[in-house]
Length: 245
Image 1 (cartoon, one colour):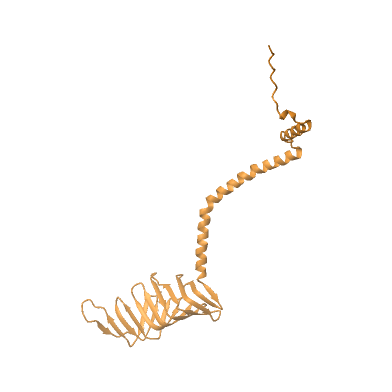
Image 2: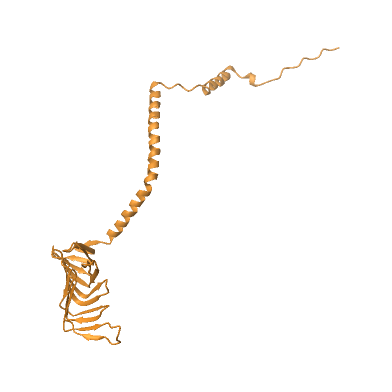
């Protein structure tokens, strides 16, 4: 009887590597598992400085952002207001002594304000301004409002005299309306006068005269004739005629 043959060990190629190849594999493994070097004292100091700065800079930046969010509505309101002012200023243009959109303000002898506006004003002398489409707004003794306008005008700034020419129209808030070719206004004393014909219309009726004088502060109106006066009469269908004095 024959004896059984003993089993043969398995044949593996990985165990047949050379010592040099094994040493190279071990070196690569050792390099990949090498620990990070511990920083020196200078590196630790730099890191502490960065951390200290971060503790101050980051909260300050956050507070700045929160403050900007809180004040942004106010900044937006101010910017819109400035834009409105710039738009108003853009309407006023100065070209070779000519002012477009002119406005003059002052007070009379009784400390009541008056205002003169014009489409344009041309500086002739330090005292004289030639106006195009001037309008004067004044107040009477009883704080009644009156407006006078014309095609052209001359404003003497030192004397506060306004000379109007061309379709002069006077309107008072009590319903009085007067038209004349020319008129002179003393803004300080509140006197309006004209030596040309005038037509006055109002609740009283219609008046035609050769000249007139109005004193706003004294409440006096004078018309010089010959003229014609037509009074409104509710009791008669035919108005009366008369002469202005």
